[in-house]
Image (cartoon, rainbow, N blue to C red; front, side):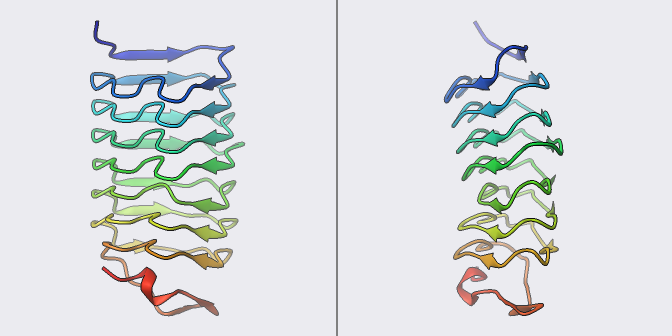
Length: 180
């Protein structure tokens, strides 16, 4: 049996780790408002998934939750209670061209290998751009780093076309973070 559509109803509060791992024919997922967390690798390698809307009620998207979703073109992170996007949560989503990270997120480590990514919107409140956050996002040309960011970690932008001045309003961007 091939699963192509999934509807997550209330009262489901969390999607467990690996719940839909490698469901390559999965095209559509509808998540209810009230869902609180999406587990590690929950939708990893769902290559046919094109769009995902994360409800405002979700507080955490764990490690590699959507990694390898090569057909994923659109991710909507509704502004609300989201506090954590785990490492590599959207890594290898090679069709994703833009994403807006909600203001509730204070650190990001999640978008490595998104080769079609051209635009990322980051908001004030973000403090840290972590290791490999945008590693090998080879189409990424421009990122406005909010004033609230005080730490840009090693390899954050390796393999990207984006460049930054060495000093952003008094903040030092470590040179090794920008090597291609």
